[in-house]
Image (cartoon, rainbow, N blue to C red):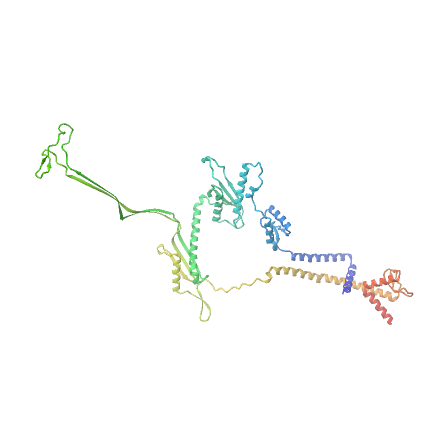
Length: 554
């Protein structure tokens, strides 16, 4: 086997050396190109897929991460389009854990770590205040950036100096710039959350003095002139939540009866957002109570005589008294009679029951509800065993309507309306059988397909290019060897005289048998040359021996 391979190789080399120089160069270039193509395909098939390690890194953070990856021995590359650092997909999580152990990537911006830096001995109070001010802005920006819709944020604080004069005091203010992710937006609640987060972090900062702006320059905080529009928006949102609550109640109570896909419900709510305050004072006359009572009596017995200007005539003593027949004293005939009138007054104060009510009606009360419910036909099997759609009986529809009324709190005085109807709206859908993912979609199959493609291309190159080329070279080398052998045999049989570069197989006298090569000096050299010739071209030697045997037989 080894001898045959050696002979074939010698023939190929002999055929290659017999080609012109230009053909030899072209053949070598073709072989080199074929090898390079096979190696390139193999590298492409075995090259791992890469994934982004950390998106959105800055230049400084990227340099730190690249240095850390080099120390950890993790291969990486730079994406030419985005400039992101990419590592093999199979080592993404491992690389992230390794970077986390080294504290990479570091948070953008500056926070309270500024206060940990060496401030030096001669640091002034102004510098310390400015550094603390900057640290507060950085910490607030980090907090705002933790929202899912915010890529990064910047916070600017305007904190005036404190003054001992009340008239000169100025309230602090703040502004927030948020850079949102593409396709993301902040809801009204999220903006309000940012406003209250910033205002709660700064002393004496009111929420009205916080402004939020996005990267497009749009003001996200409401303005004073938009108060009416914002109020209408909040009212619409509250109405929608109320309607969704009623729909959810209906679905929860009707779905067990009609099935998860057999019911549709909508509710329209008319809400009153008026703010009403009233004070009511009621008196109950039937409920009285005596609070106080006052009694006054007065009696007058008569006149004491003439009244007039003081003097001798008016200052006369009264006349003497006398006894009557009954023994009681009476005035004389010239005296005045005693008074005979009296008066009596009584005052009573009663308290009447009084009720004072101060009523403040909250906005958002329900003024009217309109409910619409549609139930689908039911699937039934007829006598022939076929699946048909049948309507729901009227009695059952009425029971379902009563359930819906109870669920939404139906009130006829408000003018509420509930309408439940039965109509087919869902087609009988065939059960979709989701096929399992094809085996060619598996990642390992794709990697194996790459290797198989490389192997197939290499095999085609060997069979269609390399093998015919080698066979051609071997055939050409064999034909030239046969030509040389035939010429040597003729020389040996004819006994022609050979040149000085031929050898003799014997050292005896007579006609020697010469072989190609330099003329040896001794018999041992001749014998060694024959051995080498047998190793190099055994077919030629075998042919010579065959001819000798044939000559001896004749």
